Image (tube, rainbow over all chains, first blue to last red; front, side):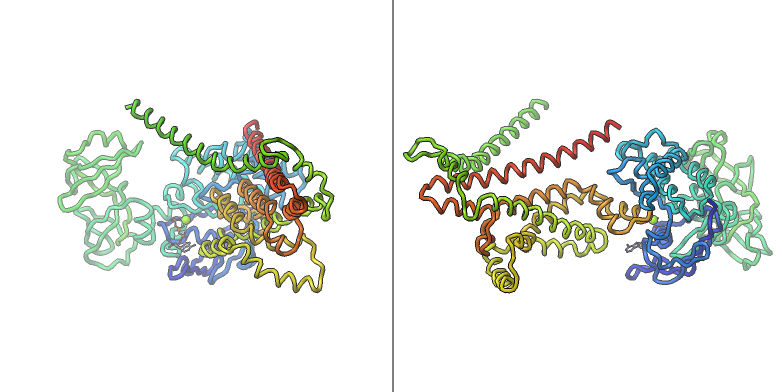
Length: 342
Length: 275
Ligand SMILES: Nc1ncnc2c1ncn2[C@@H]1O[C@H](COP(=O)(O)OP(=O)(O)OP(=O)(O)O)[C@@H](O)[C@H]1O
Ligand SMILES: [Mg+2]
């Protein structure tokens, strides 16, 4: 089963006076996994629910494989969906849950069971086929939900923060597994999350949403290293806001001359967005200050440095950070990556 | 510290026993007295089964068995009607029109606030008018009984729905291709089995014990038949034996029903564990 093209055009949706979607446009290429990323309340879930037909659009159009399905009810759309909340039918075994969609399609019993076991094998849960939801862990339940959604060979797979109820380790594991399965079955997939790491790790393209629209749509690399707006830049990575002076296509931040991502930036004072990874520790450099906090993130660490009038975050390997306890004096420089002006 | 706890627990336990005993006596004494009276012989303080014998030998009209039959049929019909009416309603209210919860609840509780006699005064002319055109069997009482059962059945069903994530389950089922009928009867209802069972028990109990309306609308159900039995004899003991019989009849039926429901529940629990 290969994926189909999905396109959302000019979607509008309001709840009373709240505008949840404000003319959202998004096209998913066949077989592509697009992650919708954005702060709480920006309309990610609403987008997904409109695509699934669980909610009606006030305006706009939804097409799947070229066919307009804007007014098709959700049970006729043939989309697989995995919810944030656990959604397995409690009175059915795992196998019956997975086979439910096929039963509704009047598949023969043998065929249903074969397909259900095939899907359970895909998510690695054949052992648990006879169990009930309350006998499974959260991660296992979401896997079964994924198997159930895939069992009907959906045209489109919709995932609404399926991992948010799980702990960090299971989350990363299941995230990679979802990606593996998605590539294997080739279904066009929309994945909603508010976790930027998750979005960047799993998606072919990431759509960053803000106030009911897509602010930027691009590959994870694009989004991360060439954010189109300061909103995207700030949302996708913790960012330092530093004052600088723009002149002749580059910007001078405390003695570091950095190229501008957008050369058309007018000359003058500006706030520059700098990633913590671009700030590096050097024996002597243009920026000097005192370490006031060290946060260990595992392989890397983040230090907060007081520069006198402001603070700056720097991210460096943990081995280097251990040599810099709070209170030590440190010199920093900024790597000359193209930067964005707020 | 633990001593203090233990003492408090003992005090709470003692309080419980007192409450149970007092209420137990409050309920049981009149029942026991009734049964004792039904077993009273012709002289005070003697024992006899003659009052019960008179129920068994009662030949009608109308025959006792037809009363039993009508009441049982009414119980089944009323249960079905109430469930068919209320189950989709409570689910729909939970799912789509949450703001109507209070309104629907108030509507369903209304029959509780109206005395049976007032209901009859309102209903009698309606039944009379219809009966002028058609002959209505006693089974047509289910209309009234369904209304009377609303408050109890509604409460039971609403409570049964409490722990069910109706929204997510129905959306999951919808996205898999289920129509609303399938969503309600094959996805939601199996998860509120206890609520459905309780609603059936309460509705059944109500129908099995109903006398006033049937009598006033000139129908003959079990209770009315038993009333005729006791009225057609000078033996005052029959009044008590018929009352006891009615009570036992309902009690045994409900016991069986709840036992069957519970046993089936346990069975599926067990199969969950063993698999
Ligand atoms: N059923 C509803 N009734 C009223 N307002 C709603 C409803 N659903 C969503 N909204 C509003 O629409 C906006 C978008 O909601 P949506 O659920 O799409 O956000 P989201 O991006 O998924 O957020 P989150 O990350 O918190 O899940 C929010 O302001 C929300 O308050
Ligand atoms: Mg959401």
